Length: 212
Image 1 (cartoon, one colour):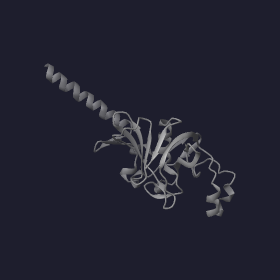
Image 2 (cartoon, rainbow, N blue to C red):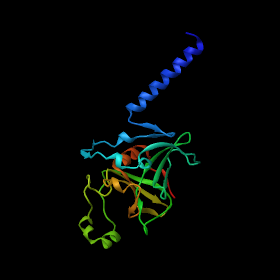
Image 3 (cartoon, rainbow, N blue to C red):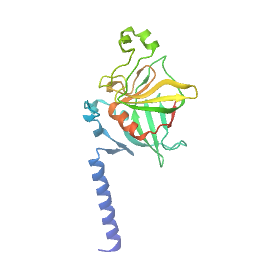
Image 4 (cartoon, rainbow, N blue to C red):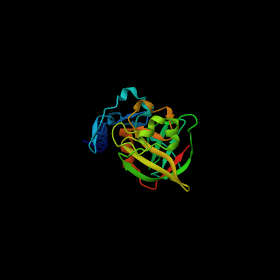
């Protein structure tokens, strides 16, 4: 086997191995991005059984995927694009992990720069007084809603603070997968539970969060 032929054979073998690795990891390439559509199956987490997400009903643009994302922000930064309903976790080499999100409905939008001050797994949700006033039926959770599949903060929550302290806004999970890509929350940024678990594992306390 000549040198050129041998190099071609080696290149083909490397490509085959990389392709197999992509299949085994449950991801697929699509127009330069890498989709993780197989990441939405049922899984047990801290004793809670997350149900399977019917991913075929989630538009491709709102499924977790690695995309090209040039930015001057350093890796580890979170950028929330509220108009496109995307959250980007900045990675090295001009890439980002992109997640579909649900955002605040009209009257509850916000923007600015904050930081992740706290992280919680299977958090307790306590509705603020203003929300209880709007929805008196939530008064029963004044002392907090127990963690669980139906909890409003889902499987994970990251609490956003600025110089003034707690903004009241969160990055959190939701059991309402159908709300992703829509504006229907009370201002917080929600992700599919499987996605918030993935994002949570990547984000460090103190991470910069830019909401646009």
